[in-house]
Length: 482
Image 1 (cartoon, rainbow, N blue to C red):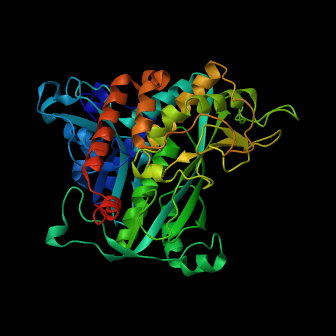
Image 2: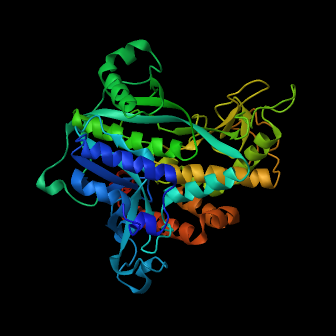
Image 3: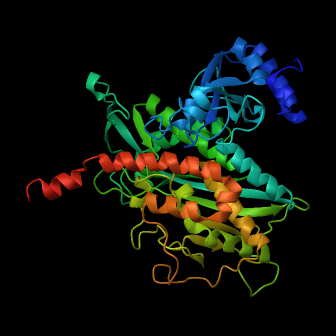
């Protein structure tokens, strides 16, 4: 390729990525795919992008794909919440005014052929400005920056995923002329299971068709699937994924959410990662993040303690734990970024309500699993919801843990009565969580105050729309009484 391409002008790829891209072009020239989806995870962790025919995809690997910067201004209804045609574009960042383009560039290492869409390639992209600098609102690059800080300490970030979600039979997609809007009418659905028979084999066998569909498709994508489980609620399921390093756990989360929704839609089903859907007897879905650090030099788990009878984690692990606890409230909006996610926090519900840790206790926000000789020593953060942008959720963990290590933060004693131990209460609403994020000086410094202000503006626009809606609760409460 010419040295005048976008990638080469700004030195955006490593030698390995150049080699990987050349191999992808060889595969395209060999007729392996007809289309390539260039996918970019937006501020919400939702995939956007463009689909190019194979002949155009060849050059797009090096030249990138242009997208309009209004995509950076969208809330969860896809409404533009910044005044993009005013001076400065409403973003306070030069180069984004007037709906100007930004460029997404493929990471060739992420290329997949989608098993459910014949002869379709897929590749994850990063966002850049016209001058080749990373887009300041590109969340994947925020996590990459956190990983580089860990690299400087000779450590790798390792994370495994436990993801809960719901799948329903799709009864009515609501495609009538009056059903469109921002957002459109949600589909009408019915259950695949009654629920409340947690992990029973009979319940699993009744939904074996769904489980086999997900297993086959996710494993064909190369995702590190470990288990498929019947969760407690009606039509609720859980998948767990083995540990991977660096940015890959977040890439895995973005791809698996998109894959599950697409595969289910193609098979007459509706999958949702919404935390608490409005269905009778519902149980909230969470996203539990297992995390540890690994020494680059010898590959040993840096959280594993060396001396028996002491703390469940090494000194490094305990300080990392201290950082997670210290910044739990500031990071809450990044782990639970929707209004609905805060419906999950109910007393004695296995969802944490305060910033504490405990050894192998599922009521605590930070469940610690570890000991001498236990190579899987780790911290399980139980605060997240499955809608979270994984790049922001994981970055918040890394920045918080790094702060704990650098400042030798003491996490205090294990809280063995997690719903009774006096401790800082976690935010109870998205608005409270955003206020905590704005006050957290470390997270503002690490993520960039411009980015934090930008993200809070988008989320506050969602809250404002919510506050203008008349809910069923209000109508039932007041319509007859007054």
